[in-house]
Image 1 (cartoon, rainbow, N blue to C red):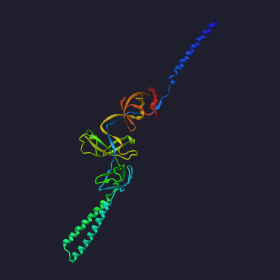
Image 2: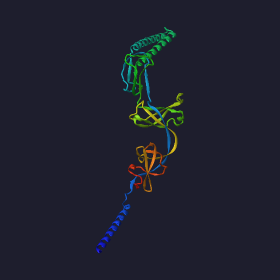
Image 3: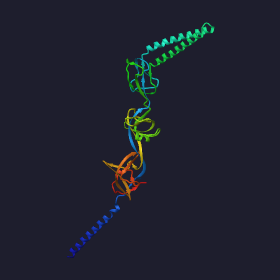
Image 4: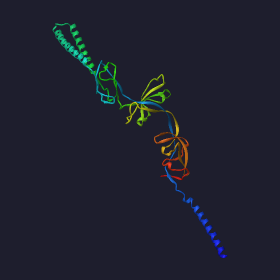
Length: 343
């Protein structure tokens, strides 16, 4: 009887002790919680930002030329093809010069005879055997012969078509055997090392552009964003579109080519904007968020982003300014986790 009673008391004690041990383990839980995660934080800054309007345009060569014939004749040779590079003075094409050479020979003979006649009349005038009128007439004939010779030599030079500057041949408009006439285009050239961006600026934005100022130009095909310097503004608007032609000089870029499509951003108005580092924004599908540090905790905030620039991104909603956000490895955090600012 006593042994049974003692057994029951022992069992109760074991249960009580087991319960106490469990409470002690539960009580030790908070002390064993995860340590604070070190994070890098930065404040949300409020900075002035210009709203911009994009205007489309094209990259063009700043130096272009259409090479035309100045004399009539048959194309004797075309020495270049589209895409060929040529230095200034390089022969590009020639026109059959036989007729002009014959004219030059005739002018040289006439000039030689006029010189001889002038010299003879001058000697006769000095000896009194010639009159002043005959001397004046000989002088006139010599001047006319000299002018004809200069004209013939110049015409002969026009039979050779040369590059007016260092550049690239972009179009060939004639073939050997074609008839060249004065004013007929033969070749087109451009200097691809000097490029500019040409666009039509609406009249409402004209007061936002000034000679010598710089605007950002984006050319997607070249993968480049460049600062273009305004070098020309048309003094009058196009009657049909009410736009003004504006040209911007572009710096050299490896993949930039004439004819490429681009966009220029024209500033419209200035306003305050909330900016954070791009690395602070966590994207999961279509959802954007940041982690704001509050009282040692990382709190998830849903946000809506705007423009990106120089490593920063504009926050359109979700923040009010002045908060501290996690800017490194934010995608590894969860809402409510304990954090501490890393030194």
